[in-house]
Image (cartoon, rainbow, N blue to C red; front, side):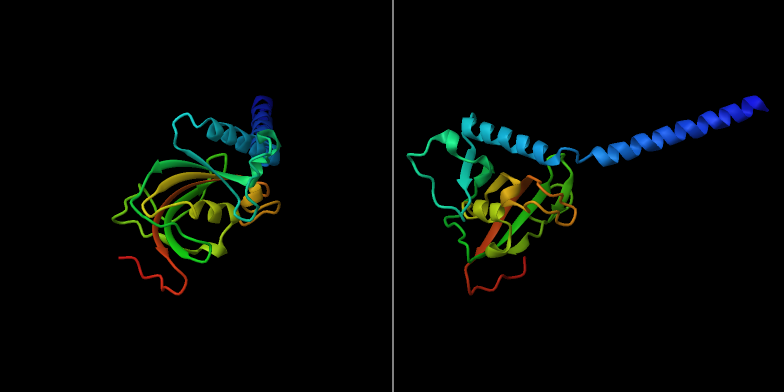
Length: 200
């Protein structure tokens, strides 16, 4: 009987320890989140600056004045820019502007690869995926900055610092200080006054 009680006691202690470990893991999932996100963007900025494969583009927030060519590179704030890797170039000839609407296929992740949002399920197929509609002036600054540089048919991976994303306060499932990673395919551009048609 004593042995049974001892085994039961040991099992209860073990389950408590396991639960405590699980709770600690949950609590720590976003530990040092601001610092981790900043290190992530710093590393992406360095890779983009190096541009080893020639497919990186760096764009300053459209809300800020253009760079001063006389300003030293080390004085620039990496959080003022979006970092874009061109995965595929489209055939479009025009770029959207701030007042346009667009259609785009996309996926969005946090830096821990947690998928936060998407416009399609499974593997992307332009024949079946229905791109979402956006007003350019109704999205986060980093998204609008990058979109204004894309042609129809372009597919890019875009990295956005928290300052050009959702900022210092949580937004839904997005924690404060979150850098964002997007995969985006620009499917259509619709100037002001144009009705965005249903997708065929």
